[in-house]
Length: 105
Image (cartoon, rainbow, N blue to C red; front, side, top):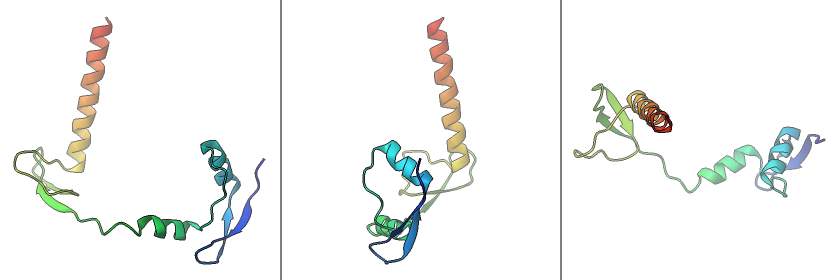
């Protein structure tokens, strides 16, 4: 079994724990190398290339509420708030399941 290991981050030089649970995860994914950076340094490195995410406001086509989206809304396509979008996807999924069941009979 795995045991927690203390490693040293190659970026900040701080010690961090590579837990037994993380080691199991690494093994399950087929990773052979131990992490070289602590979680904050990994996150910092991962987000370094990204700029701040710009959100645009639009009116939800279903409920009329405010929808914040990561793209510039266009007039020729409807925009939905998170709640309405989830409802629509759920309804589409249910309809697809009914279609599959009907064709199997």
